Image 1 (tube, rainbow, N blue to C red):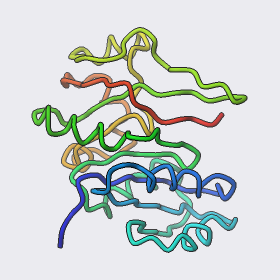
Image 2: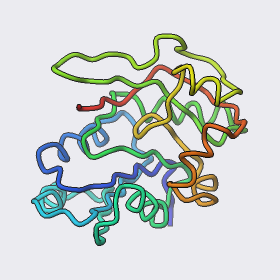
Image 3: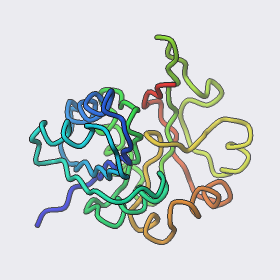
Length: 195
């Protein structure tokens, strides 16, 4: 069995109004070494049926009882087969070329286990870059960079090695990520965030 390089993990709860657009932002990438792992966290709308109607072999759907987004992300990590994990919320959208750029970073920086990217915030049809202070380079003091808003690991803007994800559950990792001294590559690619 051939495992993909990147698993895009999407926790899903009642997002039928946007989940197809989210998935299409992945399937329309100029890159194909990925899988999409959707973890339905007890949705009561038609989200799952919409995803199933896409009839795409790259999409794996898992259905579980509602336990919240961290629980769904952890479930996605358990079932993902990729070497790297990218979390994407069900109402986020990847910019064109994002997965290709992330693949390039993985190959250029094989010693890194975590890549954090800048991202756009989208509200009222206006797109704003989150960090204007730091656009590209290395950050080795995550805590300072996090506190000064140079980086902010979030869904759609952080790529983790699966070995790192499997060592820590998502709820625990969220706090550890700002204190670990990791060499982080920051690149200007991004996911939209619908607010």
